[in-house]
Image (cartoon, rainbow, N blue to C red; front, side, top):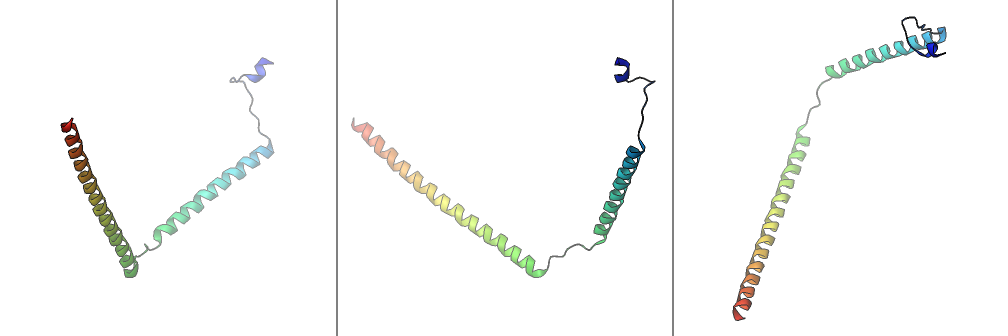
Length: 103
C-alpha cells in the first residue's frame, strides 16, 4: 500500500485517450492564441501614429497656460495671507512685550 503512493523509477504513469485529446486541444488553443496575438501586434506596429492636429494642440496649450495662471494667482494669494499672518504675529509679539514690561 505504501509502495503505491511513493514515486520511484519503477512508478507507472498512464494517461487515458480522453486526457491526451484534452491536452492536445489545450496545446493547440495556446499555440493559436500566440499566433493571433503576434499577428495583432504586427498589425498594430504597421498602423500610422496618431497625429495631433493644430486645434487640439491649441486647446491643450490654452489649458496648460490657464492652469499655470491659476496656480500663480493662488500662490500670490497665499503669499499675501502669509504676510498678513506675519504682521498679526508681530503686533501680538509687541503687545506681549509691552504687557511683560509693565509687570
